[in-house]
Image (cartoon, rainbow, N blue to C red; front, side, top):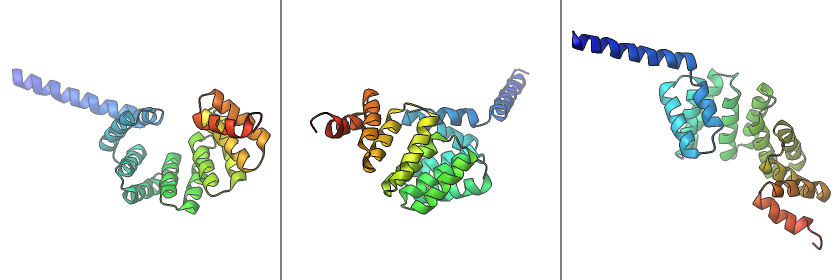
Length: 205
């Protein structure tokens, strides 16, 4: 009887854990990983999600992300393709594939995916920042500036975004606007902004 009761308790615990996963789903852990700056913690969370929820959009995202982290960008892209096809309303799938395509030098494909991500979520901060970065790399400075300004409207006073705005203005030859933003970024601790402020904005240069 002792062993039988132990078995029943064990089953109950397994069922309870299973029910908890079904109730909470992968969204909570995924959001934790999304808002975490610690790469080891992000990796641990995403490994867990990819194992526990392999068929969810979050699970596919994590699987693709982990493949890319291991250097298998082509494999990651195939998983991202499956993610986008299977869950077209999940904007982060397009965002992920855009970043992978950027790494593979597929600028046109990346821009299309960034656009799709933003279409599904017009306040997608990271998508504006990364698309702005891609526009800057391809020397479309006016388009990069628009994206960085939009990102700053969504999340004001992020030092990297202010640096990017300043850099875009600098590339467009608009030094007053560039220096205004670079000085703000400098005041928030951006070292690259400090270098540009010294080079272009301080009196005597």
